[in-house]
Image 1: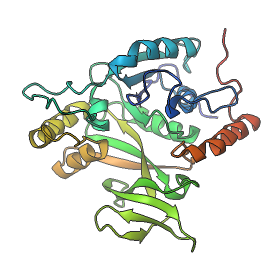
Image 2: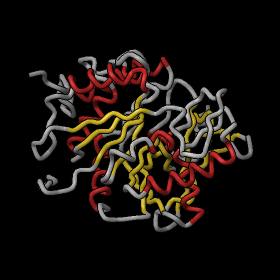
Image 3: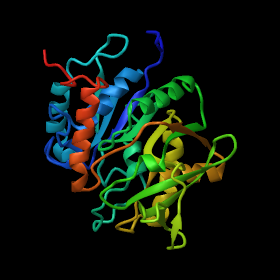
Amino acid sequence: MEIYYYDCMKPTLLVLAAGMGSRYGGLKQMDGLGPNQETIIDYSIYDAVKAGFGKVVYIVREYFKEQFEETVRQKYQNVRCIDGEPLKFQFVTQELNKIPAGFTLNPSREKPWGTAHAVLMGKDVINEPFAVINGDDFYGRESFSIIADWLRKHENSKGVFSIVGFALNNTLSESGGVSRGICSYDNDNNLMDVAEHLNIFTEEDGVVRGESTISGQRVALDGNALCSMNMWGFTPDYFALSEEIFKDFLKININEPKKEFYIPFAIDQMIKKGAARTEVLSTPSKWFGVTYKEDRPAVVAKFEELAGNGTYPTPLYEKK
């Protein structure tokens, strides 16, 4: 059994939740899928706490922040970290006008600035190593343990980050094609590139294929290839590096109404500039989520199975 010491640094979990909608429980990300209407994010919080995380930072939108915060605090009010301390929460908003000084927002802009911009919203409340996840993805307990261990080991590091890579076969949907970023890395597991492929599925001949965004052609893909599901490990120096890249991005795209600043783009720029390297970590976990409405029954059945075999208690959180 893994032993944690009370004086260990507790990393922070940053949850990208700005797309979750105005009503907690109203969209697929907050849909009750567990045996007692637990949401996917409820399982992520549970696994993160077991892995040693001590704080959760939600990136939300201002128009639903108050109700979202009230519901979250009520649901997790009795959750304790591995050292017995209450789990801490903070809520930060992502808005279009939250851009660096010197830039003027295009009034026609309606589309959010993207995931890397969302992460930047946490710079004033995060001073320790942190992991980033999507609010609507199930990553698995092993994945949280892997990223938590990496973050603890890199408490005092700078210029080195990480990404948890999932085997492509462990991320496919039975209901249709999916988009995935396939990771390329060197012999030291340092990330070199994340190549986006669209409409990935197993074809009738048993081969996994997807459409390359570079060639536009369907190509065969290795089912064991590691792909990004937006689970990253960062140290606080990430914020300054990413903000500088965001400024460069805005110089070119400030008047583009649909261009977005994504985490893989920011990381790619850091790699090319020699400012940071990113280690690729592999996980045996099987990712799942509700990409299509047809996925929902299978996800519900999976949570029933995980509760039935004792992987998770049911209900997941006891009310006191």
